[in-house]
Image (cartoon, rainbow, N blue to C red; front, top):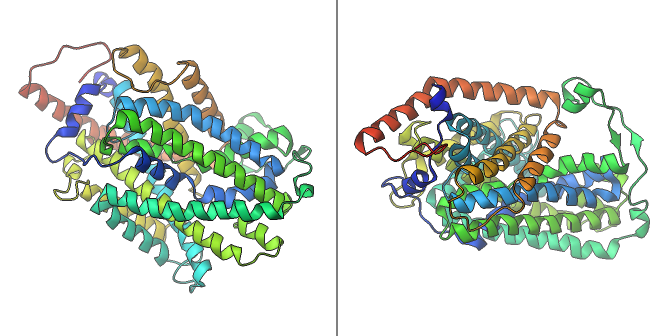
Length: 498
């Protein structure tokens, strides 16, 4: 049993399985498509909501520095993802990388974690999409928005995007490309128009003086505060860092690009480009918007669910709020689409490895997509978005993502030692320094999340352990035994068990 849970899956076998009949995905994506996917999932609620909220609560105009710090932390993880995705161009992202380096049990944990991150994230964002739709078109509150139960607007957008996901990845890329173009145009509109309304007095002081803030109590207090009794500060240096730990989650999404490696025409060249280009573009946009918004309005007035609209309202440009709402709807639509796409690819990889029922991994003969998993994912996310109150659970998306970042960073170090012979078209610089720095940064952000988030995360992981030992471990073992009986046993290498 111990040998089974620690068994890794060779890179060669993982790549060979991408050509198996019935499990072969279409390779249609270019570096531009990957960049569009990345920008599509990153630019969403972060740029439309978190910018103003964290300026008001923690950083003031120095929220610009917070976005820069968060981008640096993400870049550390992105460098690790870029090496893995180009070296192991297989669907599944961190799940596949974990299987190749740290063993089957770790792979299952990461896969189960990504199911939480991507599925719950899509459901939460769908409810946000419904709220913007209700505001833009003044829909009845029973149909869409925060008070709708069920939230028909959220369910409708998930159902529509599920159909798009079944029809094909290339179509998903075209839809995402169109919506991203509209979204970026709106963001550039905000930056361009807002520059004319900036007042230097709003940017002074750039770093407001530090002051203690009352720590949250009970399960809402950060884990670090609960363990050490640290009272957090707002503004000043620690306020900037606190804001960075929150706006970091506005960058989540570049990791989803790695889930499409198996559908990329030239993954060795294009995966690193797609991951790093999308992160770089979004970092520049975030800092530019943060500068404009805090220059247009006093940071203390921006603690609202629609800070961009509030900033334009403060300077008398009311009509701009409708344009911003349209951009938010387009932006959030692409986030939902790419999250659904990413989750279906993770489940596809797990099913192909028999950790989930292998029948789920069937690829549609015409569209070349894992249609059964895509539909199943869409139904579950649609029900969650329509019926489950998800506001307090949204932080689970963040802790799940950070956990995946930690595993990928550690995996780069392990694979460099166990398989130095592998061809690497992209190499993370300064290994092991960069991966270790990424691990430390991600763990620091994780312990700044609330206690109740950690409790829910542990419960979700416990359910995953039960499923693995009850089904996944035995099913995967039966598949390996069948393969061993059919083919000669390969020459075993240390830490490289097929």
